[in-house]
Amino acid sequence: MVDRLARGPATLSELAEPMDMTLTAVTQHLRILEASGLVHSYKQGRTRHCRLRSGAMNQVTKWIEGRKALLASRLDRLGELLEEDEAIEKRRR
Amino acid sequence: MKAKNSLTHDTFSLERRYPSAPAKVYRYFSEPEYRKRWFGATEDWSQRSHSLDFRVGGLELEQGAPPGGPLMTYEGRILDVVPGERIINSYVLAAAGERFSVSLTTAEFLPDGTGTLLRLTEHGAYFDGNPEGPQMRVHGIGKQLDLLGRVLQTDQD
Image: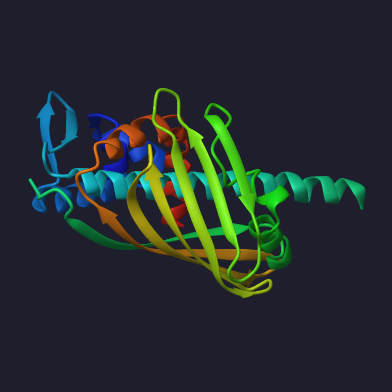
């Protein structure tokens, strides 16, 4: 969730959508992040907008998150390669 | 604001389930021609190169410059190997020749049905005051952030 907000503000449903979590679960998660001072949210009409608090994440924290995200995306790339590999082998059998 | 040259330590783990047997996932980690297909810089990076001398004590060197960003270098050393089961390595990352982190990574290849549960645990010492950090983040992983949704979803499982 923090990674998503590092890209820019988002609504609660935008946060929930890629995570396959219920809105209730996301709201609970958001409360924890708000209590820890990482995230600020406000309601506009029926929509709740969320953003990272400025200064909440220092440069190093951002860097570590970026590093983690880069590694994670490489592991996903590996997963795609392995799936292709398995599909090719299956066709050969 | 922290003083320049301050230090932050961090440990994180990433887990993935793959459909292939541990021996194959291990091959994708240890054989250079397989490893560079997923590990190295993406195609939009310039000045790309990768070399891996896979043996205990062997070196891995990787470099590349993200669009508009500085030349990033990865200099790693293989520290421990249990073939098909575990690889431990350390590496130093630098941007434009300036070091900004040193890490120790353990990759474990655990049998998971007919597939593999990969567990990557990384301990890092991150140096503060490097202006390239956030810039690198923006340039280096901008495109890859789209993958993050899927990453997080996997993490929920």
